Length: 144
Image: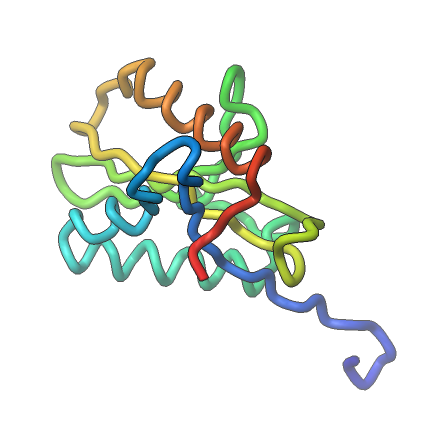
């Protein structure tokens, strides 16, 4: 609590979706695999943006083009955007306010993609992200 009696919201947790063995024998964690594949500076910017969103917390965070809600078939999914010269890096996340599997409100990082600036992502990329949302909702599994 602050001196005026109002409460400061607790930061949200950040977890990484892990595929269940029923869906992927290797139980991959697509977002960590993606972050391992991008340049170090891009991964560091993703980390900084996620930390800022979690601290805000997400319902209060002003995106500024770096944290945006998706629309259409991707409604309910958020993306962290990093845009160095020539490429756009995206990390897709799901907000989970309550869950029996998680210790509190959580940003669940699903997976990412890299595309050339001013180009559209391929529909199969978005289909994969929606599949991961479905898998998470079914199994609720995150990397521990």
